[in-house]
Length: 194
Image (cartoon, rainbow, N blue to C red; front, side):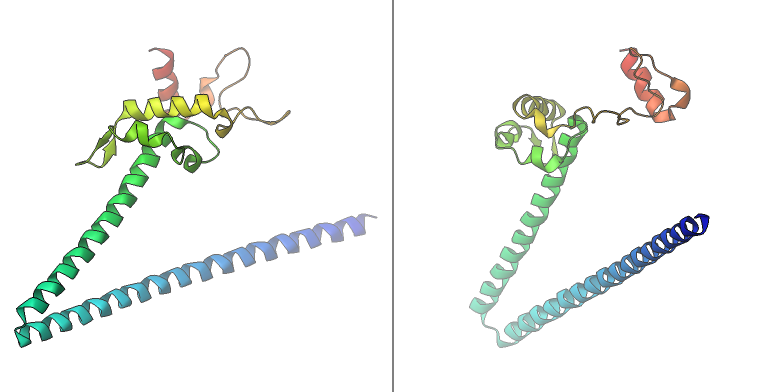
């Protein structure tokens, strides 16, 4: 009987090793494909830039002022469009970061940021120059969403699940600081002695 259980253990180890190897191969393939994709994107952008430069050069040689003006307007519109896309991405990420700072443990920060009331809160709370949001507005927004949709936040775990942080016991608020990291200890001291 010990031979059978030993064989099962060996089979399990072989399966685990194979799974690890498969995961490593997939990670390597993913990294290679990502690198190739970035290289092709860069080549495509470069070829577009060369095409635009050639077209501009041809227009300059012909001396057609109207065509040059039209081409410059198109280039300006394209640059403004790219700037707006980049600005939207930066603002969106800044918004997520600011809300995440005050949201605590949530299932998905996107679910909170995509709430309809976000526009009324952050319409006034953005610093256009720094592309950042007001801390007070972020706190108020998170509190309002928490009130309206508490199911977006992680609650206590299931029975028997360990949901406590390392170093913190659930014994009537007693805290064992000996197992806390330096950052957890600083946070604990800051919160305890307000």
